Amino acid sequence: MPLTVSTGHHSVAGIRPRNEDFVGMVTPGEPELSCKGMVLAVADGVSGNEGGREAAEYVVRGLLTDYYATPDTWEVTTALDKVLVAMNSWVQQQGSVRRELAGMATTMTSLVLRGRMYYSAHVGDTRCYLLRDGALQKLTQDHVWDRPEMQHVLTRAIGLDNHLVIDHGMGELRVNDVFLLACDGIWASLTEYDLTDFLKQVSTGKLDSEAACEVLCTAALKAGSQDNCSAVIARIDSLPEGELRDAISELHALPVPPRMKPGQTLDGYAIEEVMHTSPTTILYRVSDTSHHRQLVLKTLHPDKANDTQERSAFAHEAWLAKRVVARFFPQVITPDQRNYLYYLSTWHAGASLQQRLEAGQHFTIPEAVAYGGKLVRAIGALHRRSILHRDIKPANVHLGDDDEIRILDLGVAQSGFDSQDGQGNASHSMAGTPSFLAPEQFQGAAPSRATDLYATGVTLYYLLTRHYPYGEIEPFQRPKFAEPASPGRYRPDLPHWLENVLLKAVARDEAERFETAEEFLLALERGAAHPLPTPQAKPLAQRDPLATWRMLAVLSIVANVLMLYILIAR
Image (tube, rainbow, N blue to C red; front, top):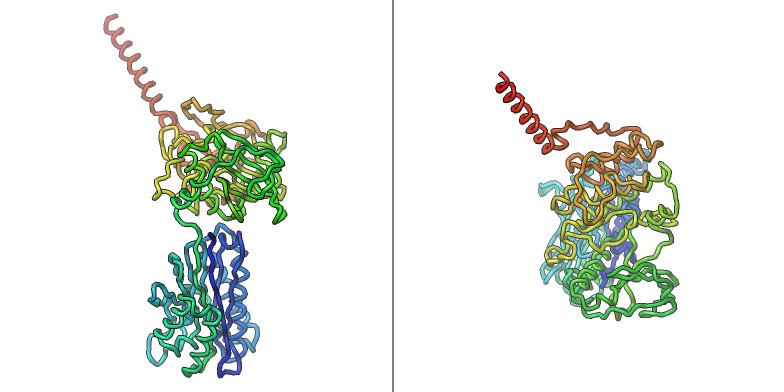
């Protein structure tokens, strides 16, 4: 079940000749709803002339537009901060170059509802309230002077100062939560008892959100409000699926579909092609005739229908795939009805990097750097969502005909979301493909962000050279890692800076690799302008301490034998 919210808004000038408030909201569909959420905002312009209204309208409209243009990898608070700081600079600039807008500024309170969380961003004396379980909470603090005679004077507003400081808040959503965004024309005229009463009527369904906003503005004016009156209300009607155990319980009740052939249908989806078959899963390309689109349908292999562990692992994968909403991944589609165990995702024309290599495609240096940057960004997006992929390799990286990189197959992925549910489907350290496993994993180390980044480095190394830095490793092997082969040995046209980046990414010692995806990406983007230093050759004592001690032991024995021989010879 997706996030559903009942919203409403109303704004009136009241007794004033001009309304300097501005309200707005965006309630997108999928995938934007899951990725970015919905945004609600109210602003109260500050100026003795037309600049106040213009500032309020520009900031709200700009926020609602630019927030959705920010990268999907940014956290909500980061995206809000970046957008509002830019708005602050624009408002200040307009006030300085246009005389009629001098002194323009605005307060602003916004709310983002995404998944099972809410995020607020606040500047000034507009307010955000939350009614939960019948109790009203004020989520924001007014930025005014703390003196009775100056409580109408703002200490913070957009456009007021070069340095904008934004108050951020966040919390977990609950069904029947009611949020109110209001300007001072409302909250200064009505008591919290009045606000609570109106919002309770919204919570119980006696008033819808739109009607409640209008009633609030009317009540404030009747109570003697001398200012513009504006309100935005949002009631949480339902929340998206939460815990993994719920998803497992739901999917466990569904039967595994029989093996399908092109031309057959499943829940109204026409099978077009069997894309891939493994011992545990089957992928079909299907046609969704009702929406005129191609999708991918993934299900368990019929032979695993009664395997409880595989069913749980599949439920975990489906649950996790639904949460990686970004352009770097196929997006999960919720079917109108589901009578079998499967999940749907978007289909994209193209092929995996492995398929392209096997077909003989040659990747130029600029292409490999560009695709490498996109792949590293995708890994960073996973890690910021507390997800470890654990099987990054060319076969699991799709290059679409739209030139977009997408990561496939979360079958052995691990996340912080499922730890509390005790999911062990992918917990052992050796999950993945041996040639892409980091050296420490062969010593029993747990998977980590560092191991994902190592596999990413090997993937780029292989993309450019068609070789592995430590040679191909078979599943039954327990290799001993020396120094990685220089990629320039296989690709003489490789620039020196890129060779250093690859060698750092696949270094044997974890401490010598990139610590984060962001650091890896920065090295690729800087390129020859700011090259990494060439890795220094280590002395034997550091590369292989055991061999060093063995050599010293042998030399010691030889020396002792010589000394003994000399003594005896005398």
